[in-house]
Length: 123
Image 1 (cartoon, rainbow, N blue to C red):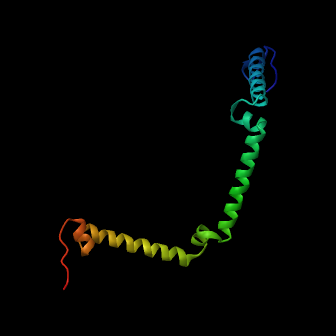
Image 2 (cartoon, rainbow, N blue to C red):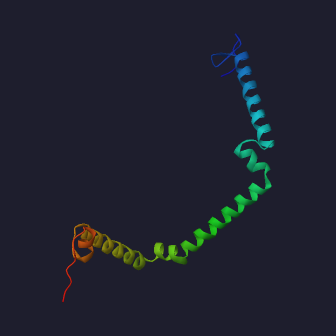
Image 3 (cartoon, helix red, strand yellow):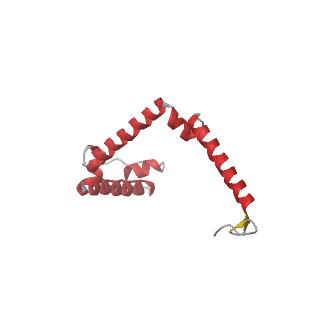
């Protein structure tokens, strides 16, 4: 794809290609100026030392939390890494769901009370 005798490159006039390239370079130059001037998200990140430091601390903390969980430490770490704890939690949730179902169905003392019925006392 070379320059043809009629001044075209790839079916386009050489002047058009040059103009488009100049426009692209002008846009890139403006973008770089904005970044260096601290404008926009990237510009602020590149020029604001406090923002950079806070982001750096956040990333480090997130890494520590992830490492702690992966090592099975803490509640979340044990829950994710220990199948016994996860199974126990699932069983507790199933029991709670069943109790809620029975109360909503009006079963038992709580079910009667929830539906406004009197609860008979045993003597």
